[in-house]
Image (cartoon, rainbow, N blue to C red; front, top):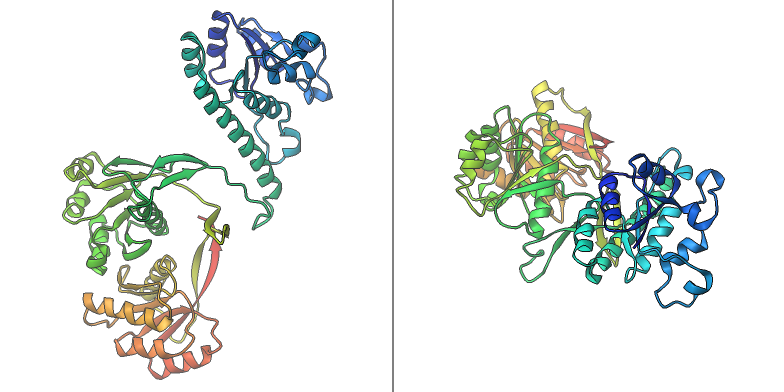
Length: 483
């Protein structure tokens, strides 16, 4: 067996090459790889020995030669083999140069991509290898008589996928000065099968370009809705610098609290809307301890998310076998995508940083703190969104309503269930008020402070109504920043 090796990543290569030589394989390698193997006293021939052609253009051209590509692409019965004395190559082991964003033109791999594609194209005869993690598996198959066609096909798929991702990454680098790129390459692999899709009659799976940003420590397999809610819940709590808890149902928060005590943060988040929280997703932005676990365990939730869990917490939760514990890692998304009209809608994944532009009355530090807390929550709720807060906890949340007034009414209704007297509470919305009906509705429920972005053609009328009702109307402005 003749093996051609040209690798930038040398991980595991020494052991792999030694085992191939023991099996009687002849190794041919490009200059850099040959030098690496010779240093380790592994018998190797350089590609120039095979082709009689020295590398040129400072090494940019060294493998692009008819004898090499014919040796990879030929079938065993091809008459040109004998006619041109072509040495058949039976395995191609290749990985690519690391792309340098600042010097992308100089670091784009040409020969390696071409060799791997050729080997993958002819996988029925040639074994294409691009991942060092596959070395041991390939050796085992060779020891047992050869690599089966089924495995060769999987290796070919992996090789073509690597080439696609590599080319896509080059375009991304060339395009990255654009805020919204002209070209989007989506090349993802299945990470895990889901319990089911959005509904039980639908199959589902999770795909990603990267590793799964978390670990399921116990419980049922994740479902489609679990994934969406976990993402929403984690994004909600990580907006806060202090200890926070969010309970999410169908991607919308139904309770959020920020409190120095993790137990109090959970209790306050749950108290906002315990009915909606039933069977929801709970997320924390701190390691969950045993004290918190004892309280959380008393209620029914599908998933508990946290950056970590103490041993005591894990032991307490283990009594609920179906409860999913999700330990998440820090993850970042430059863009958000969703399918629509046989295509994709893309938007930047940024969180608004909220500031107070002006207010009809002077704000105390405590009121400002409450407003900024509520504003972080309201931008995590589906529009039209309204949040009623008291301190750094929500007491009424409504979103996804067809009108601003409907959202305000629903949030106030839910707040009244928890707290009959809304004196001292603050109402915050994610958009401007098109009419003054929401101001009047809030006033009738006892609200004296309202915060919203400005921009309505009726802002002056809104301000006049607020002034007449002695409501402190706070106008918000947003500045975008990345996570």
